[in-house]
Image (cartoon, rainbow, N blue to C red; front, side, top):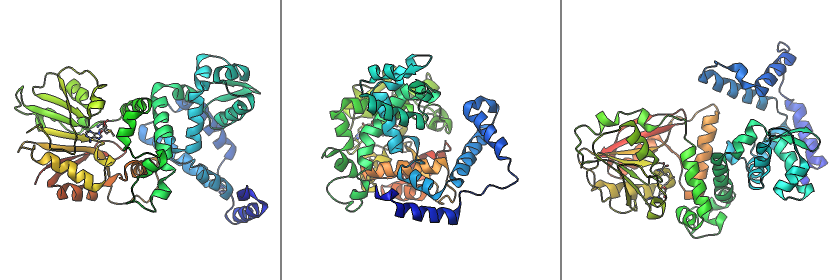
Length: 424
Ligand SMILES: C[S@@+](CC[C@H](N)C(=O)[O-])C[C@H]1O[C@@H](n2cnc3c(N)ncnc32)[C@H](O)[C@@H]1O
């Protein structure tokens, strides 16, 4: 491969001699540092009692230190293989993880408490021996299993995580649905107003993303499991507002208090019902009929087929709620969706956009959070020719659609926020 020809090696060596691998101060006790980091890596519970902020700082500093120690060659390899990208977007890491899941390697390792031989994995995976050996090399090199001795392996906590239904769904979604679109993003950007999105180019289809999902039930199921699972444990929009006081005061049983537009399986209706048990008023889940068929059964939640590009049929709801809907759409389509709500909005109606609200001021330091938002924004570009938006962008967009932003409330460190809008 020409990249690794002697000529390139020479130039990399030149670079290395100019930059040097990260210089380590003589005052650092390298041996002690290594043994402390090893201790943490093998048993993170040694840091029990660490506050979350300190945990994140330690993670970030350890990562920055690892980057700083890289040689130019190592940096090149990291970038070529997108090693620093967010978990689901590291192509080879993702591909290896999917092979381990799809070929029953992880489930075999997890089914046995002790060591598992290559022979047992051959039977479970039905892969040829040479192929399995190189896959196990990659799996172990990426920390997804541990090699105990030649041709003997064991599961690690990561192996167990990768075998869980949620991670299987997440990886299926990113590998099978998102990755082909990302590989076409570069070409798409040469003609962003052309007939096909990067998504359509990657999947060689004229169907939109959601219509394609309808035609591929396993991918659709993975997407909806992932959508539900990826926010488990994080704060939610209900943590930054008092729904009863701020929106539902004085509501009677037949008043509509909440419409979740494009609400998928109804998890937000369920969360609202759970938090405010006994709150009077109707709660309605709207989505495409094909999605409603498999929505949750929530007591008191009505289901209604609705295309959000058409006039909103439910009038005077206290809240019209859009979670992770508008980031799937370009500005012009967002305005169409918002304008379709205007005639249904009464004087008490608040339209709530629940989406990322990126800070207007660009961050000067690279954090895991900012890397994640940047990656997600490119995924939106690849799938929908859309993006994650900054606060000023939201304000402009909402105003152009005939609404005005009353308030923006953030509820996670990952820039998740609710934008509360009323009619102009
Ligand atoms: C990214 S998901 C968000 C789902 C849900 N709001 C959540 O936060 O988990 C987008 C949702 O919009 C729905 N959707 C797509 N096009 C739609 C349309 N034209 N009308 C109504 N819903 C639509 C999809 O079926 C999907 O459930």
